Image (cartoon, rainbow, N blue to C red; front, side, top):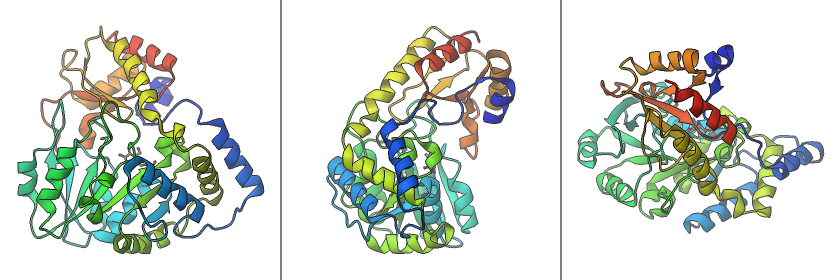
Length: 364
Ligand code: PMP
């Protein structure tokens, strides 16, 4: 969709990336680190100063104390972290439970490791898991459960009760959890719900974060994994041979930035809530139905009042007729619900971009 949007000159609300500048001070720190810092290999596990800053961040936000030497690994984006975790844990014949719609990276990594995906289908409008149905997917082959909250593509967020239900379901089994929390700071309303704040569950879990999302720098590809020491040791055996280490000067810049401005940097909820509300208000009079959005920078639209064509065709037509690129939600499912007519818009954009996109969409 991004390629088609570029070809047709459409406003691109398909791919998830901000169109506004990151914090100038962070960019200056990166420039300084490249010009005057260390440009050789970083330690395999991540710069000690960055791991320490991440440890402080987690202590501040989740009241979780971690050993920054044995429980944090810096990776080249959440993508690498997730790939490493799956490769480290999933063995041929193992089963992994996913919640569909699921981020597109999970399944290929599981398949490459020789694992098999078992899927629990989530449906509109709230996309909450049915825990009874979840339990029925578990068996002696289940190795891992993949969690993603706040959730891409739906913008739904788990509640504390969901974490507890997950824990109750897996407690007596030999099952691990990979929690993709790259949108951890982009949530609206209540407290964040994170595996970090569930003392029992986190002992079985690898929690993945991304500075790309939290600092509006998706192109830096810098993320990290927090996991108990034994799981971290396994993860690092893969990380060592996938990238060995992550870009040194960018780690220096982020470490310094985190030390200089710990709190204000992560006030992303109100920042993105305003963008969400601009988009929602601008689309209020249109024939699209807006689904709830509790987190992430994605808004789902139901277009069933406009067309009955499938979402891939509809997105192609949107580019042609409205000049706006969106993502069809069916691509995040193995078997999409038949009557679901949903598209995803990214609202990590300047207000003027959102207003213009909504004006064009309202013509449909
Ligand atoms: N998980 C989810 C749910 C995502 O949306 C993304 C980015 N689109 C990633 C992981 C990958 O993050 P990164 O860019 O840090 O590799």
